[in-house]
Image (cartoon, rainbow, N blue to C red; front, side):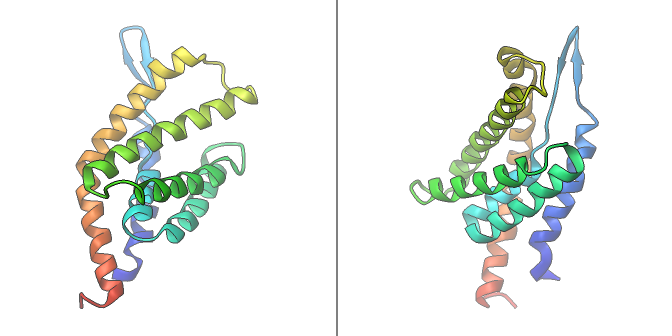
Length: 174
């Protein structure tokens, strides 16, 4: 059971994302703010940083493809972006300090990058009608605030879980 905990948590997070999406958009006055939960990619970045870049990229492809199939009409967009984000995370973290604060800031930066790339692609093929300024104020900023709360609340738990899995893999925990 302990060996399958990493993919089970990823599956749980995959199914929790649409639950949290039900709270969006939020209306404040006459403005609507869209919160996009990115729990799976945040978790995959933790895996890429603290466990295995290869596993994170594989999980990224699988969950990106599932995200494409279940949530959007374009097959391949997130199947490409999730592994790319995991690769970038592993590449960057090898060049900076691997403490938890750095990793959390890296996660937030990469979530913003994911949002900008997906918006750019949607704009390029004309499946979105919002402009860049509206995207920034009504989607990117609220998404970053909500995901930063998630990363701050759950980040240490993910790190501890992955560290324990690494110790189990090496045989240091029974």
